[in-house]
Image (tube, rainbow, N blue to C red; front, top):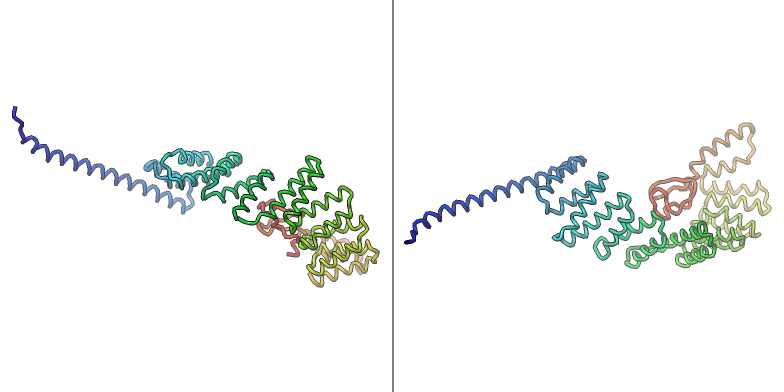
Length: 386
């Protein structure tokens, strides 16, 4: 049987036409898909700009379905879920990214960091801690360590917080000496209150003083510990040392300084110290302590109370004026209690302490702000003096 070459000649154009048609159909489909994905993506961006998060999420879900391999869309979708408070879905998106074998190293690190933020926002601190520890050696390492530090502070795990702060300091990410001293003070307070172990508390406080000589808190806490143990003289000397090491904190302990001075028979030294402090930086708490110290030392009350006037000549103060007027005679003495009550009421808000970071105000002084959790953000001065 002879082979008829005419069939080949007829088949070649047909095969070419079918191939061309198939390529056109594939190209058309690709163009349709490429148009659909950007359209959904840009629609989502538009919703985001208009702060319509729910519609943006729907658009990004559509874009992800059209192009499931695009990691950027997954990141955008996961972040939107987290911002909306849908942490479970955010976790699923980022865990899906981490499960992909073809994910680039940079995107894998980014997904791990995003996953840790999901757990943190959801309040799952243990899982957040595990996720953050996996970021060691990555470009997110510093952020992870700082977040871990915040977690340990929040959960009051002071030894772990100290370890993390030391790692940050050794890596050159800041000076954490003052914060490390706070951690030792927190551990000392725990040892004293929960474990009833004053010896360990004293050791921790002495270490804090050694590591951070300019920190006021360890000296103040150690003085309080010595007072409870009946060693008033040592407590006075510890508070006295603030004048050389942390003079700005002396107004916080002016009243306690006076009490320890009276208990240890060192009123004269206390008056000298308080007078020197007031001359360097006038403070209404120090002025009040001077008045009470001079009265305790035998000075007539009327003469001692002239310190109120001296202070107001340097620093006008409604609080000090109210204290001075409390013992001044009135022409209409019957009106005195009413006027005094009004002055005290007006002065009370001015006697608070205010966080310089967030503006939180409180009657008591805090080493760590209850509002923003910042350390040493409360100036040791009353609101009126700020």
